[in-house]
Image (cartoon, rainbow over all chains, first blue to last red; front, side):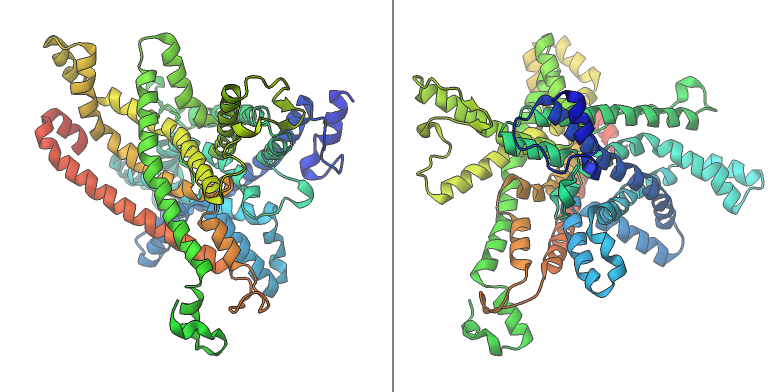
Length: 268
Length: 294
């Protein structure tokens, strides 16, 4: 069996296309590269969707935490505190068992007990809380002169937010937000280790890497392959966010651009 | 535990609960909280030691050592931490067994990797097959501590490396002009002064470490996650005198609250510590104090 056959059989295995059974013996390097790469589909799925949907909630949370309304402020503050103060691993477990018990009373919630919806929901809340805190910090750091200039131009309400507050907030928060995005993608590897079932062995990259390590009792091949895939993904992310960063800073002179610095990671 | 617990069927709700929560099995859950605390206590200093080593290596004048140090700091950042946890536990175990195998059974001729098996001679096994259960548990726990220390050592190395660079250059130059050797500058000036710069980063790291402790479960240690799943599952009257439905959601709610409280308290302690240290910088000279007060 050539490597191309293996790719045809297992390349989309993680979403249920191709061969039904996972390889049981004679694991070649090609098997490992193909299946682990196939699992990356789930990591990208969780990461991208959680990041884009979480971005909207994060903006709302940041505005809520800075709001003048007592209840809105407290609500956003507690949401951020709960999701940042507890381990993501425990959040996954809690959410899974919560959805399991809710399912008995509300049948329409049953998709939430499977990973594609339930884990995505948890990741969405989690990243919204972390980025919300980043955006809140940036919101507090907006130069007063910018706001005064906006006032002087007679801007108010939504147009002031859309043209001045929001772009400045993003610009200030962007380096930290880039890191948050990278850690979110790393955090997606936890999904299938936290009770969410990998239905018909459709798992993510770490699920398959762990499968190979268990079967061959040799961790020195699957995990470095996984690491390679993730380093590649991280580089792509840094590149994409760097492009967005250039766009955000386009009106500033070159030397004033905020550089994206890869900082200490935050495990959830 | 209590005397009125002898007959659980005819208890009122509150006393039923107090009996239920003090069964010997639940004691395991409470002990495992101790396991988590012990892990934190052992890992924090070990990781700091690893981090110190990594930071010193990354500053070395010799290219090779510098590369190793920098590699150690940066590799852990591009790859999910949980992959490292799963990797190191097997890798360290196999490394130890391989080393013992080479020492104890030099006459062994068959290869160690036979297809999908990892075979070493019986006396090289770790722990020995004949060892009692508790030795197996302690070995597993120590492997976990070591794994945590390696991963968090890399983060600590990053923080300490930054802190060493944050020590004002004037301080170093003054020391050199006093005729101190490199070693003296390192020991008397650099290391004592870097801690103030490192504290915010190390505090952050401590919070991250707390939130990483549930991952012990993945390393095969019977920790709080294990017991919460075990105890929360449906129990029928056949096997226990305290039958109940699926209560796992409540157990994990408990864990969630436990971690929230833990991080909250830590945050308060770190804040106080920072304040105290900032006051204390009076003695470290005005330059440092201004940097911290900023």
